[in-house]
Length: 542
Picture (cartoon, rainbow, N blue to C red):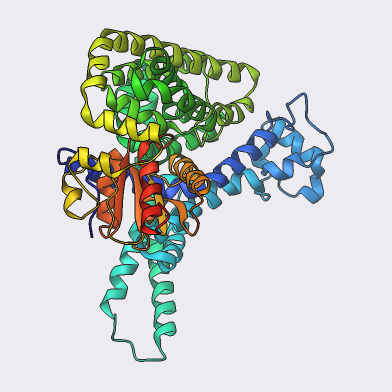
């Protein structure tokens, strides 16, 4: 099976390994983002300072806010007003029988969802069940939300289950499979839950306290903006979801429990640096980068798909310095004026940021907006200086790069041709794949199932799949399925896999038998026209 080449030099194994680990971390959180958002909205509406809360000017005295919030004890005896009064006056501890939605979701629902997802990632549904049982022991053995505990105990429990099943794989007598499988999983889950309660829970309390202390130390010394030195470069290496949902979200949710909001939600998700970079390319870039940047800016800022600006930064690595400065500036604004979000902004669009910030009050929303604007302006100005300083070299390179000229010709024509293949020195054969330009599709199998793959399988890959579906529709090509998935969820059924160049090696490692195509930009790539033309030729429509 021939596949497309992806890079002129071998990628760093360490980088691919880090990306794979980051994908695993974010994979536990991303499928459950809807639950986090639901909990965030419930919190925003019904806590005492929320829109309907007892201390809010919009509070509805007849509305059962206290019951939704929880902590109201025997509601039948004290009534809604009594429960609300107890909560407002800080006397909720006298009524602890009624748990309510807010506390139950953050204490039980969210960690258990993470555990089940993590278990399924390791060992399908069976791993998910045992992971959920085990993490329940961790939850009840602590007095704080156990997100970190779920992210560690969940996959560990599933892995232990997998190893246990290997012990008697193929040794169970027919007719006893269900009995052995159910009892073994139940007994193992019980043991792990007990271990989680007595041992793992206290350990995770210590880990959480340590990480929280590190954050508090950074805040006390006004060093929190320095996190951007690590965060921004890591983002453009497609570790954005891992950083935001694998590291910051668990810590931030604990801060929300204490303070009602957290600055950590905005360290990675702030859309300001990305839109500032793209606006600079819009005004001062050259060639394809300049032409595609305006549309990318709209998608990044309003759609929240941060991955769309990563290729721009990678094409001009010096601009990563601008992203660092912009990110640090936004963090500084939020740190100085106490800005933060009440729940994760996912995706990181200005719309999601607004929804997550407004529940903490209009002043908080204005601070968050200011952090976005400052981050965008700082990134724009520094990127503009970098692009202006290298503009002549970039224009010369744009005109001298033969491969870029061929790609542009194909883009203008709307399809590839044998003449362009000849200029590349390659034809549609397996031998040509070794010398084809990075990402050129060469297939010797019929293409009917095309998958766009990205780190989380949601934002940028969904956008690319939509673009290609429209191209197939306009070309009159039917019978081709175009979907989007996370790289970790790829399977051999994919005839052709399209990824951004930095992620292609990971995708090839998962589905080595598929044709792999690399693109720099999911929104607008000449490779899409190549894929459409290739499928048309296979079907005799060209």
